[in-house]
Amino acid sequence: MKTLLLRRLAVSLPTLLLVSMMVFGLQKLLPGDPALALAGEEHNPEVVEFLRQKYRFNDPVPVQYAIWLKAVIQGDFGTSVRTRLPIGKMLVEKLPVTIELATLSMLVALAIGLPIGIFAALWRGTPLDYGASMFGLAGLSIPHFWLGIMLILLFSVNLGWLPAGGFVPPSESIGQNLLTMLMPALVLGTGTAAIMMRHVRSAMIQAMKQDYVRTARAKGVREGTIVLRHALPNAMIPVVTLGTLQFGELLAGAVLTEQVFSIPGFGKMVVDGVFSRDYAVVQAVVLCTAAIFLLMSLIADLAYAALNPRLRS
Image (cartoon, rainbow, N blue to C red; front, side):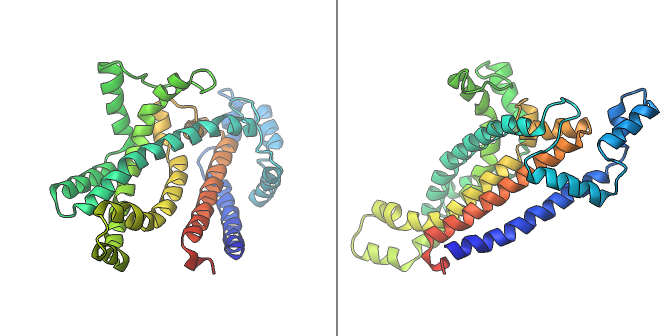
């Protein structure tokens, strides 16, 4: 296990460094002069030159990258030119919101995807199986922003059951917090549930064909016991790793959902940074998101090795 951890870290660290190069380099290719954007509508030449000197826009790109990376390693992501707040403080405030949304979305995905996938595998070739396949196709095909708007029209505008958007911290009201996060969690969770259902169905079909299942049936073990105690635990091994990776994707893919429901998380933060040319914010959010996804990938590898002893060597 220790060797596996060191091997994964040896791959993850250079990957994160490459991501930081791409994040910093690609934003330099965006059209327009960031100094002019920061100077306002008057574009005073003295102000523009002052901004170029202050943010070192005149330095070569490799020099700018080295200065930025050194500061990031020390935990300094700079200051937002839009809000004038330290970006590190903004990340600390926004990250828990996105983590809560991703966690609730994963709970929704597990609550929907696991039972549907199991029943579809047990009743393979029946109308239930075909219905599950249709659900999976719909969950993968429906855009998140469209589903979010439809839920707002139904539950907020027409029925008035749920708030249309916004965010209430759990410290103020747990009940109101869950009400505001319910629809966004459903939007993100349905797509993940479709992926989870397809993998659970496939894993359960393979597990039910194994020799130990055939042996248990020959011994007269009840079918429910075979499914719950023999087939399901073995089928969950790839699902655990899939769920870990999907959680990382939920953290990175909540941009449109947070924008539709006005949730002040990572997604809305990066969108606001792009529109206001706040490059430092965009760089920080993308880099943190990449680091979180690599961390979840590392956890997935370790979880798979822990569940499958053959991979520990």
